[in-house]
Structure formats: C-alpha cells, structure tokens
Image (cartoon, rainbow, N blue to C red; front, side):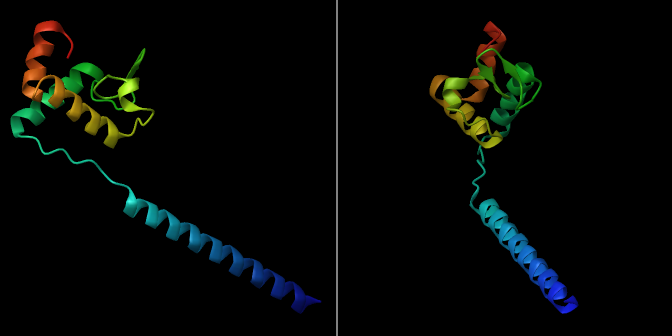
Length: 116
C-alpha cells in the first residue's frame, strides 16, 4: 500500500512538473512573438513628443479623460481597444505624422491652442 502511495505521489509530481514546463515554454514563445513598436524619430521630434506626453498625461499610459486615453490622450476610437504602450506609441506617431507632419509641428500647435 505504501508503494502505491509513493508511485501516485511521484506521478502527480511529474505531471505537475510537466505542466509547469509546458506553461513556461508557452510564455517564452509568446514573449518572443510579441512585437514592440520602435519609433525612429530625430532628437528634436523625440523631445517634442516627450513634451506633449508630459503636458497631456504627465507621461502616464494609464491616464483617462473622458474618451481620451493614455500617454498622448488619443481618442479611444483611434486605439481600437488596444491600450498597450506599443500601440499607443504607434498610433500617436501615425496620428501626428498625418495631421502635423512632425512632433515639432504638433508641439507648436499645442503651444498655440493648448491641444494637438
């Protein structure tokens, strides 16, 4: 009877270890496939982008103001439910590029009107 309990305990431990190993492997695979957005801005544009982020949300990716979300206070409709840091960065760069041509121009607009 004692041998049976030892075998069951050993099998349970091996099953648990195997499950943990599979879970860890899945997490590593997911981390490798997650893409991080990298912006390629000039120093002046990066500085203007940081300035706007500070004045819009004090730099917080979690800031909310009505329908405006995140570090750059973008309309929730622009983010399509994806409030990740990477998506906020990508969408903000695209928005500014389309509307102002550069973050430097967006900052000039912000200074003149209090928004961008």
